[in-house]
Length: 80
Image 1 (cartoon, one colour):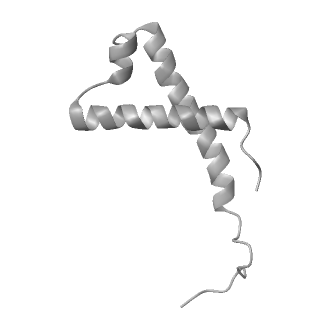
Image 2 (cartoon, helix red, strand yellow):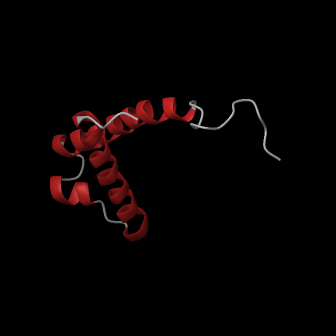
């Protein structure tokens, strides 16, 4: 398995920030990004865009792994 590079770690951190922000919005109706950077200011929109790009990067990392067989598992053999 390959190690995470810098871009991978940035994507992971941004996804965590985005997930925590959405949790705060859902549970407490509190948008931390807007509270810190202003409601839809240029800087807050950049943060939102970077979180979205990070999600795309994460998909590019995860999706290829979903199609790989598990080591040691026989391909094409169904389990009851």
